Image (tube, rainbow over all chains, first blue to last red; front, side):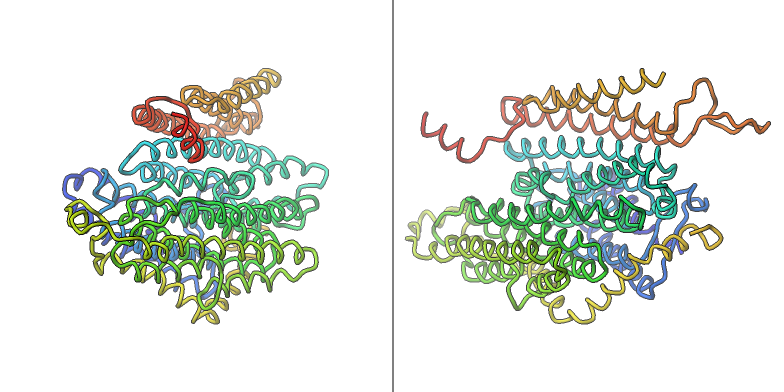
Length: 512
Length: 119
């Protein structure tokens, strides 16, 4: 039963080891980091197998009973998110090693492992204050990764990112203080049990706490009106780090699903409709912001970053419906958009390294132009939501789940129009980068023969493998959409089974 | 007592938010520090205000004690915000040394180009 805490403990042990012992030997650090991530993936698969049966596993730290001690909770949703994290981490890590990003600054691997520890912990915890602590762990590692290898623009964007998130953390603490003052507990299951018992006329503080928490998670999930940090951050972060950050926005979405479904989703008056009232319009505007950003971007990295904003909007529109079908559609789209964003950043990294700049202007074609064009368009098709990749199915599921008249008008318009704008934006960017570039005159042969010219650097199979693997994951997601969505449907049934969650965490003798 | 605590939190938060909206890194760091002080006091008060009482249950069963959990939360929050402020100062210093000034806003591509054309 100690397996549940391993996704937290393993990176936590490995990171200082890499940071202190292996700091001068990049080969050793790479080996340890890859080995650790492969082990994490194996553990995540084991946990997913455990959770697939539908049981909710609880790990009591120090064996203290639930509302008093801290618990880690493993259900289908947590297992799914940890597995997603581990898979993405391995892909990103191999890309970072193959392209040499990890050697351009110090402590990449140690920070990477700390980041994994924070993300896995945030997915597994069953306590909102513990969630705050794991948020801080993943954030402090992400600050280091964000400014990895330095540079003027990256440092300044990193500073903004840190300030934004510190302000968010302060707000998180205010929210937690309010939760504790109004309910007297910070355990998610205990909250779910106590909030329905609060009389409606005394529930105003709980409502304030619910909205404050939602703002905090919205900052992480890049929801309008607090989405503005994302484009500058993702566009200026090292590309493999930006690909890893694809899971960070999902941490925010996961927290909204977990906390606002389980704890605040109860049928107490004044609280249950609160999230839909505010989350849904914000998500609609987020889709619009993302789509216009994709259309207006003049550089490749901000373009991809805005497409991430748009995909978060689509995801949260589905989350905002707070129904089991919509949530299972949202989960499918979440898995898809994580890989789609990651593969876009990875392929953009390969292209931008060879072009020397990510400006969307025609420039002499680099080596492997055709290969990169094919990969870029495959990734763009996935992100924009065109068949045959999983983006199309994901959006279809979301649209299908939002047929309720209260949602349909706005949601369908926003998602369909947003997809169209995204397709146009990506098509324009890709044709400028890859097709117009072939029409440009090639530079003189002597210039190309220069040793430091990056455009002709051949791409090694190891550099392509992570991108291919992520695309293969998207293809598998589309091919096996049936089994996957059946699993996700079970998952969302389990999410909405609040009594089951409460009974599992607090024990059967506690009143649920 | 309630008035003092409440106005302390309010004034610290107001000052923190004001400084957070400044354009210079130094003021923003001070603002975040003020905000973290405000939230620490706020967390402390979330377990109800109790004066001159120990955070442990009395052996003799008299029920007056102060809630120990917020004190543990505040301790965690202090440690984290202290560490974060240190990280922020280092990153701010790095950005200052790279850019040569401590303005916190990014210059837009367009404005950068416009400035280049002017010059």
